[in-house]
Length: 441
Image 1 (spheres, rainbow, N blue to C red):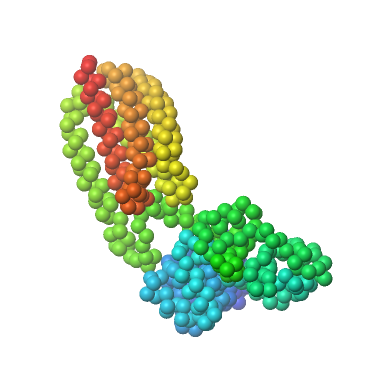
Image 2: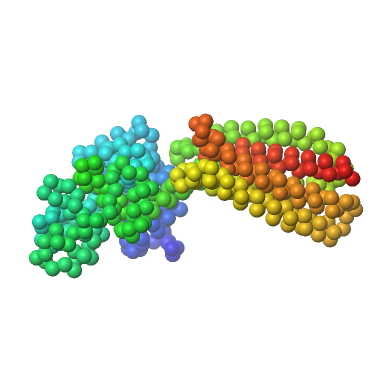
């Protein structure tokens, strides 16, 4: 995006903004806090509604709250139903009605309907903006309806067909409607096998249909086969992006928070986990004092402690991530998954151990030092790598299943606590092996 000179006159700046994409304007809006009111006034409420959906959540909320009552109503009037629903969900439930009451009655009902769905149901991300025609209509009548009655908010990549009881029959891609002869009856060209989802189907199954059938618009029906909304490919991408971000946050045990909360409040959400980790690390340090004699006997062991911790932590994190994602996507069977991960861990641990022996031996040979028993140190590191990596991988794959079984959120398994457990087991294995082998010398 090119640089914008805000010293320009309003007329010149307005002309420049008119030529920019809404996502570029959203970036300008976010980066230039002193110019936000000016940008808002120059582009007008209609275009700002497009910019508004591109803003980050925190800024969107702050901007809305600063608008006048009339400006709030105007902004909401230009937003699509599903965008209103997503925006309302950013606020606490107690504030939902404050926003919804600014909508007209028809829109209020549609928004409340979307909010009534569980977040993992297809109905929750459906949009009521679609075009419907009847079986007995002619192509020219349906085409005229699309031209005259469709709005900017309607999804017209496909139109849908109802029977005389207003029940869903099928769909017609817009391109097929365009190339059909005007006097052709709709029932002669409708695709009765057009895929659809029910409102209570999972979002994942609906998204799979969009992907598997390579369609741009998926109709959503209620239990009576009445068309109530559509899910677009764009909606699917946005949902998958949000889900990905949510899973990453949960994977690292970052609790959800109010976007308007201050840094202190956010810190308080995360601090307990970190403090527990500190306490456990103190316990680990106390435990390691048992091996002070081993360390004094061969100080070279300290050089390779980070390697042991890093490799064990990495393989443990991989196992945790694969397991948690598989559990949440319902794509794994516990026994098969555990056995497969054990095989993977065995291969990786064995190869890492062998490579570790070679690397440590060469490192100590090349590095000028006075360390004795270089071959013993290399063997200690290799065996420790192999065993600690295997144990960490096993911990990573078993703990999520164990937590879920006792009703605890398994996504917390990869947080600071599990990292500390991995450190404890890795260091314990390392110094136990070192103590045993050095005693044999």
